[in-house]
Image (cartoon, rainbow, N blue to C red; front, side):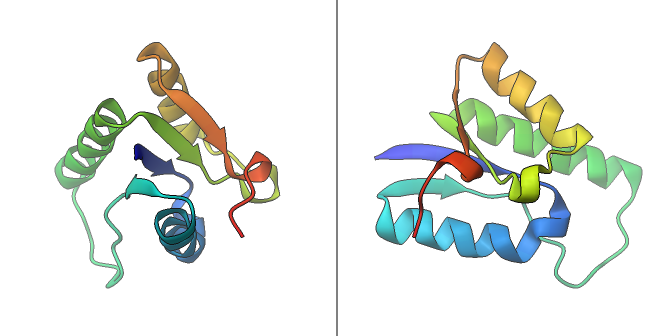
Amino acid sequence: MKTVTICASMKFEKEMQRIAFLLETKHDLNVLQCVYNTDNLEISEKERSFLKNAHFRKIELSDAIYVVDIQGYIGNQVSKEIEFAKSKGKEIIFHSEYSIE
């Protein structure tokens, strides 16, 4: 079983959750996800930094990243995550190129 970390803009939060479910139930992948701020709590810059560092650690632990590039959108942070994953020799899987249905 391959472990992947989902990388995407938080504007795709609902889509990421749906995609993670499908990847695990239909494609035998173990999915590491970001932490969702479902209550829209305010977070400090220090807390934001903790979350970012934790996400990069998840990428390090993964075999690959799964980039949710809906309508071709890849934001600045996701671009950094892709470059980081490449530097670690991780496989990059783009949602637009992977059939999950």
